[in-house]
Image (cartoon, rainbow, N blue to C red):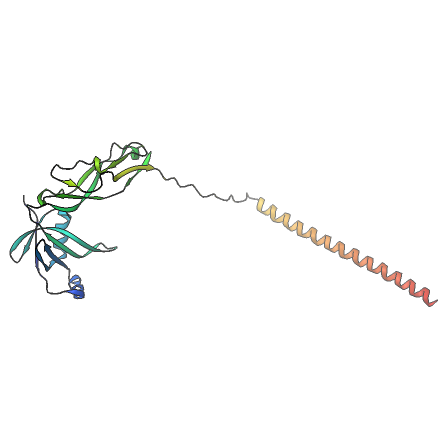
Length: 245
């Protein structure tokens, strides 16, 4: 089986200086493996992205290094967020006759009946599982059929997945992959009713009348107090007149 080729060159720029390579569109990388000394390399970013889009982390790449072809897997891809721009990558050189462990991506297939009938909402709990196999047998992806999920609580676990016979799953078989949950319905916020036309004016009029009434009551009380004071003054004047007589 043919695998995509990717040509890399030896890298002499190390440490913090690799920032200069990134600005030039070059991706710093390392090649390592069992009983192998790590080799710093570099690769044009566009070339790497094209191959990685095809194989992901489970597909073999024929890495061309100094005229030699090495079977490798992509490992430890570091990304810059939120642009998702690759910053560094490792290429793990494998022995085609020895099994390796890696993460295989999961891909849902179809749409749950519970979703199409608006009964519930599908939630995906995990997007990959750990597997072990010979490098040439690693699955590019593992499909997860979900059409049969029709009721709230229905789920697909790792044990339900169809795995090739030559691949061993290392993830807990009881782990939930996807499940149907209740629909989330947001309650509308209460809306305050605006007063009908005329009601606002009437309320203002009532308030004004109340203020006027209070004003009149105040005036009446003041008048009564003044009248009472005048009577008292007259009584005092009469008392004084009698004393003088």
